[in-house]
Length: 398
Image (cartoon, rainbow, N blue to C red; front, top):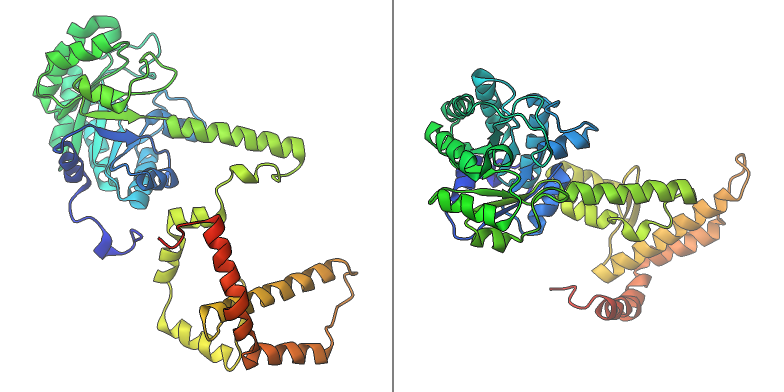
């Protein structure tokens, strides 16, 4: 149900739910979810936690991942992902947005927005993507101070310390930093931009019993590994930071090019999420049901009176019948009649009107009201439609 229903909200905090996932066997898989809809799709696919990438958030705003976005802007992303999906979210906290007090403010803001976990990195501003060159590292004791500040500010937030030191200080240097960060209060470690399986295994071997996070970003320094391969190497968490964002961007490129080339979207319909699919993903009708009141039903009944069909201004059509089949056929005839009226009017001058003969209106109204459609619907139309469903969509009733 929608997050608006208090009884359906999780009783436990996002942080405690994130910790609980890590107490289970296996590796926790977290895809990047750059907005609320992406988070809903990730949840529907079976993921139990989500990731918010600094690169994904920045790029979705048309900005580079150089530490430009603010705490409040990140909180906007956290709120929409957490509200939409209800999943515990791991959030990219960059360098903590400053020193100790700034880090503490970030932790409080993120936790209040609904985050379950955060990772903080040991780069200096302007920070860079972990898979780029010329990164500048903070002193290990300065980073440890940030981690300690974060641990003091959190209630249940799970804190992951990220180190980018492997590229410049080697595995030994990265391990030495990681140990300092754990002593300062980190719950887990994220070694960034390791370039082969040997490095991943060596880091994990040097950190026995420590929960480790792996980053499976594309087009970076890390070769492709699967979740099970990371687990075998000793890692408890894996993220795919901007994979969904990249796929979505490529699809948008094709769409815009097609509109420009073809003058419309007619050749892209097959690649689009349908209205029904969208409404199912976002729970449109679940939200709509929350706004319904008994008074609205009373008004509809009074307006309908003895009739079996109604046009609802700004909402569409409504029909009733002695059975689902009867109501459907009336809806079909009503929709067809409306479509014919609109098409007829489109061929006429703006100052002309088309009037259906009164006797034709009376004849069809009498048919609709007398139940004359019921036998046709139940004995001919409805069974034929069910046979078509069985043929084209077997298992639809499961």
